[in-house]
Amino acid sequence: MKIGVIGAGTMGNGIAHVFSIYKHSVVLVDLNEEILTNALGNIKVNLSRQLKKGLINQDTLNNAEKSIIISTNIHSLESCDLVIEAIKEDLDLKKNIFKKIDLICKKETILASNTSSISINSLANCTNRPQKVIGMHFMNPVPVMKLVEIIKGDNTSGNTINTIINLSKDLKKIPVECNDSPGFVSNRILMPMINEAAHCYSEKIADADAIDSIMKLGMGHPMGPLKLADLIGIDVCVSILQVLYDGFKNEKYKPSKILIDMMKNNKLGEKTGEGFYKYEL
Image (tube, rainbow, N blue to C red; front, side, top):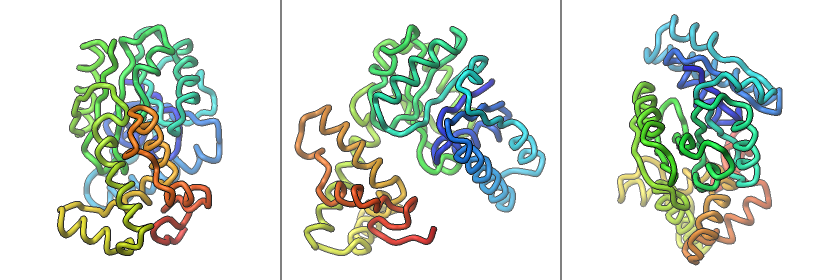
């Protein structure tokens, strides 16, 4: 199957990576050539890491590297069987992308979004193929995490759902279905926890390491909520919380002041070198 991925950031290059090692040809599209070049470099580093761990062999690595084409031209996606949008959580940008790819791609093409919170129905309604629009929410880091949250729109066809479920299984992922709703299941539950942890931190109830240690040791979480916020990106957390707040009009989803302040000060977590913790870039 020929796969198109729009957006060569962390999620986009991870998605391209996973499809490439399972013998799919991939067209990775981004407006920024430097981001595309960096994405290919990241994919090569991660493939080498998998090789050293014995998770893939040399032939798989070689074939994966050959199977990814990069492009700054969205028309490169016209022959793809599945296109996955993986740009930032901005409704207007995503709508614009879906309008474009609906016109560019062949009528059989499934259009998926890796969105972590935005309504699949709102994206489907921008196209003339709502039955072929679906959410395919991978988790970060994509090559490692097993879950793919499959989000059904009101008009998503059974055939589209089955195709994406089977494809996810072919990638050795575990697809789990849910219906369209702000934040779906994963982030509707996760983001209020991160938000509450941020409140605890700002109220000086405990420092970041103590908050995270309590959640890891007491609740069995593999990573504490503040460390996870840094991994996800503070700006992404705020965006998702805002979608939840706008969707439900419930104060529990309102982004905490400290998260908003951190975003304004570019303390976005791992990607900027500082969030709740400091990192080497």
